Image 1 (tube, rainbow, N blue to C red):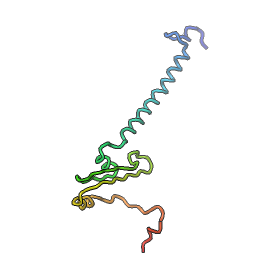
Image 2: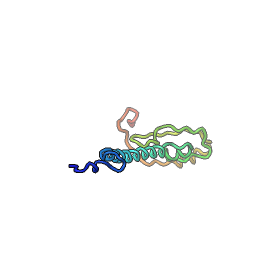
Image 3: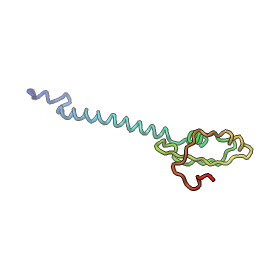
Image 4: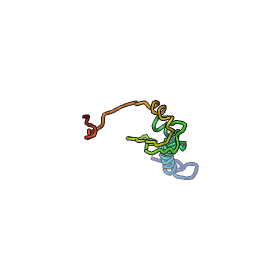
Length: 122
């Protein structure tokens, strides 16, 4: 229980409850603001590059030949959430085709989730 009325008032002339509410509000807004800034930074960091060769290397893990032209990147691999897919279409000189195909490596193979008639071996 308050015995002295001066205990209710702070130096700014406001009741202690108002100043306490301000402190609680600031205590809630600062962490919320930090979370918003962090989420925005992650989204900007994970957005696809404007340089298509860098994007192909990041999303598909392949290096394009020097003669690659008309590069088109599609898919949602930049998001990094759940199931991702990325595909790239480009044109290249016929002379570089053998070297490009030789540079491709299969990292992992999995069986299909369900068998379809085309999967049956003869």
